[in-house]
Length: 335
Image (cartoon, rainbow, N blue to C red; front, side, top):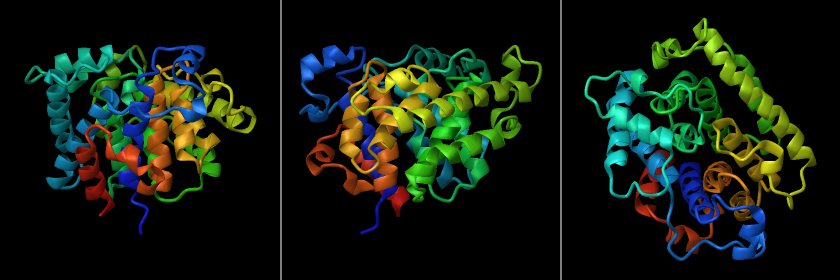
């Protein structure tokens, strides 16, 4: 049976989200006292997810809509993205501790005729930019330029900081490489090369004049700030993969994940500590001092892209919230 990386990644991110949702905002000692040993962390019977999965589905639906209408292009993606984000903002289901940046930007995106660049929060590099980007790494048939541009655009609608853009681009690229079978052992090296190649490449086609909202003297200077912060944390990640004990909190090595580059690095670290034990990787990600649901959400996306739909226990996958929506997108892209 084919591995179905899109289904695996989407289920994995939702499972990580649901596993980490009850542990978010808690210290590791408190998590251990409440839930027992981290290697035995269990999915709650009502496997409820946070805004991370809700917004991933919004990006996924917008992407599917845009691709139905023809070749993926900025205007073609921006409209459905904006509509999906505003629908999420207005939904009664939007009660899962959503991030302030997303709420502020989506409130501004409601206004007809307002350029999305004027809604974007250029000072924010919160992890909300990249916890939802996995669909762009999974959709088939995109060029490298389309994938990078779309990943940065979906981030920029809410989080306009250059590090949010770069971290989202890297997250989508990592998911794409793993889905295609890239060996996890070489993944951090591939991501560093990618970051170096893109370091001063500001994509005017996809981002327009977003950079002018910052204090930077040029678009190249603007975007390089983001890639440099990502390169710095990828260096820390490379070191951590070799030296960190799986028994210690991964946040101590690569950060607590409230910001985009740390969410990427710590989510990747949990995956790379257990590349062939996806459930153990999710449990490690959920038992962290930081933004546990977003870290575990990213860990699940990486593990599911690498191992496919069979990575996850059937009883877990069977009760995850939004299961039908996740499977519909996964099936579409795995076909």
